[in-house]
Image (tube, rainbow, N blue to C red; front, side, top):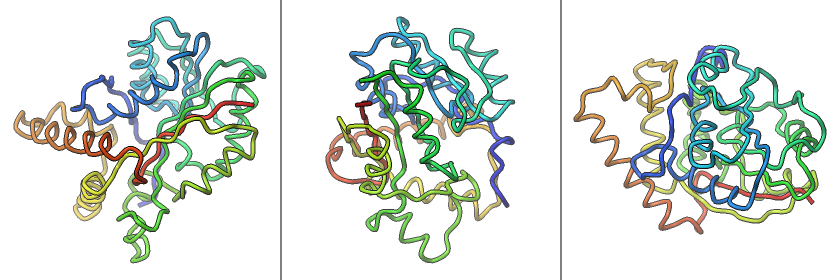
Length: 261
């Protein structure tokens, strides 16, 4: 099975600032990064638009724009979240003027790209001087992660089911970002041991039983029995608090905030 980024609409659920949400820390750290930002914000790789809409919910003063290459996802997002300016576009060729945005955000984007450096160059172009760029990136190339260990034994579940074609290491990621004139302001880690076990177990289960979700897990769970949703909430709370406790210790994911020099 080859991952098809046009077949899935992920990220269509609103995220809240509560630890039972799968995207809780991503939203929290993103809002922290935007605390002093005003004006125009671009979400690259927005999927179904839920994250962009969540930022707008907590920061209604911001003008939120969002792009994705998935036409179906953008169409769905435009219908569900009219308060956000959605557009079908590639992060390699952003349809915006130079220095148009005060900040750019991206959650789970760079690991899907064949040429992340081309995307970083384009993001740098549309950002204003001193503009903020905040991203969450999996660090599945790090030696200490369960993902990296399994990759050595031929595990391909996240590549096939989630389209992760890049396995980043933190130092290489920083070098790629700094190469384009960004200065690192903040680094926080998540997806530690318990989080990695859950993540690897989930994708291994999908792969073993040949399951293929065409919507995000949060949305899929809405149709599950309440006892399973409760179990998911408890596990998510545990994973999130583990990440908060160890946010300064390298994990399998990084929330990194940089500024354009």
